[in-house]
Length: 367
Ligand SMILES: Cc1cc2nc3c(=O)[nH]c(=O)nc-3n(C[C@H](O)[C@H](O)[C@H](O)COP(=O)(O)O)c2cc1C
Image (cartoon, rainbow, N blue to C red):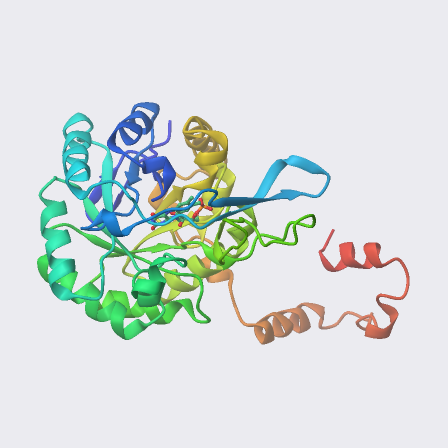
């Protein structure tokens, strides 16, 4: 039997799987239900002090399905804001969750305006509930940036460092900074968060997108009273982007606890995040599309992977594939070295793409 537990930022997790902030953690009742089903932890939907400023639209979701397979959602857009439920109700529910499931990891996701007093107040009041950690939402890409919140902060390393520093002064529990992928260099804000005192980094939040345009009405989707606005892309389609961000952040911030997410639906998806440096794996869209019950397959699949490779603990998997990244020039150098002494010259580039294009593509994919 393998041990699925892992300790991150001083917090013991019974398994590395957490629900990510979003609809799966929309109130205390559903968080408790997920714990009963076996999730190692949950990050609640992001809270702010004054929920009356949060006004959601209907519809607020859109989906991209696999070509010819309308039942298979590969990408998901939302223009949902942070929680519109009262702060006081959340405080009660978080305390109740922790009382009912003391051994499960409960993380409060928080977001405030760019004011020190607001961040200090939300941290002090939320940590009194007994939550294990805080996740600072520096990354919601839509709606909140109009109030200089979310990704508007996360895109600016100086602000990330300053706000993380305010939180660190007030916090008695570990803090994660949740990073936006909507930047060119993901390491700049991650390093700034660590300088500000973040114990951990969570990545990624959603990728800014337009999911499509309705070809009957010619209106962009999701359409609210005839118009739309760019939203956050999630689900399997963003997994390769998320893996790259986690890899870069893990390499840049080796001491930080890293919680990886973006398109995780199966144990095999999650293990790839662990191999690239994440200590835990969060799931949002996967739970929305397939139900909380996927936790059973996540745990069973992780155990099977560990047994197959002889890993005794989850910590042994973390970062195992990181040493195998190099630059493109590094790859060319390795290839040249490997080919030394062999007679066949590389195929002339002009020979490619002139015949069966699908076959050539498969060849370049190494199939
Ligand atoms: C409908 C929806 C609402 C979300 N709300 C939040 C939120 O309130 N706070 C937050 O930090 N992230 C939020 N997220 C982002 C997720 O936590 C996660 O970072 C992102 O969706 C990528 O993971 P996934 O592909 O498993 O969904 C939301 C995502 C979705 C799909």
